[in-house]
Amino acid sequence: MHPLIALVTLLTVLLLMAMMGLVGRARGRHGVKAPSTTGPEGFERTFRVQMNTQESALMFLPALWTAAAFSLPWLAACFGGVWLLARVAYAVTYLDPARSRAIPFVLASLALLALVVQGLWGVAWTLLLR
Amino acid sequence: MHPLIALVTLLTVLLLMAMMGLVGRARGRHGVKAPSTTGPEGFERTFRVQMNTQESALMFLPALWTAAAFSLPWLAACFGGVWLLARVAYAVTYLDPARSRAIPFVLASLALLALVVQGLWGVAWTLLLR
Amino acid sequence: MHPLIALVTLLTVLLLMAMMGLVGRARGRHGVKAPSTTGPEGFERTFRVQMNTQESALMFLPALWTAAAFSLPWLAACFGGVWLLARVAYAVTYLDPARSRAIPFVLASLALLALVVQGLWGVAWTLLLR
Image (cartoon, rainbow over all chains, first blue to last red; front, side):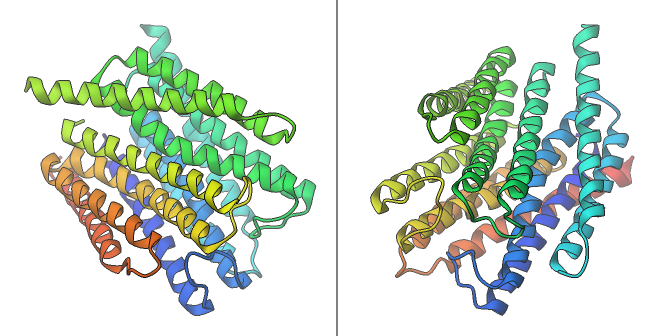
């Protein structure tokens, strides 16, 4: 594993840990006790950000590792950096009902798509050259 | 990473992206605005398919990679292909309330179990031969 | 991949499969039909344990693999073993409303944090020595 890919991976884990912390704090603030996951919109918003980040990380990490293993790791790390920053911006804008989360969402989706395309390209190349 | 394993990995990511798209479309169709995740059965069904696919992918990918790393990668890729097809069939049958999703569910579960057994076998062999 | 890391990975997959089985049984016992995920507290508790285990595994496995790839794999496997045992204890205590799940939660979180720190340490070392 390329060290830059490892760095992006660990930063993604830290992002997921931060989301977990935010939901814990929102549980206390809005008085929503586990195992419940419904309540005031402020809590549901925080919970949904965590869910969306997990959902996205589940696609992102495998795509990141595959792209890096079969093509330029530094390029995959760049796309990974864009995804990370876009995901942080997505969380910040989602938590504020007054702001739009459209741009960070599109950016993160494009970075993910770029990794999938890079991975498919690398795999196709490897399969054809054998 | 074997290129066939990488291919199965990327197809799994594409499957997860398709599920995300279906939920987005169902949100629009049934008028269920984020962050809410409850609503008409048509929406809840789509949302649950996405959740179930994510839940299954979280077990599938680590098992796939481990089985391929410690035993025959082409066999792991075959089980992976069965899982992928069964998961697509599961989504199609879950979204239609009139059809049973039992057979795709069992097939996907067997493919996953086969990967875990293959992985355990490969790891046991490696640990014993050292 | 170190065989001990592969073993921890497969045991994590088995833990996730057991959680899936528990939720299936709780659906039958409490009469909560899919796609619904709300119902009596006994069901919601079981469902939340599964969700929490998935959420934690999504952070744990990438951290485990990165730590093992860039630093001592046997140490990462030890932290992994602690995480696994703590997660089993967490599930057992969460399912019983009379018991506290605080200690297993803290233990699992510390093991995860240890893996992230070990990974960052290994990556930093690799990047500096190049």
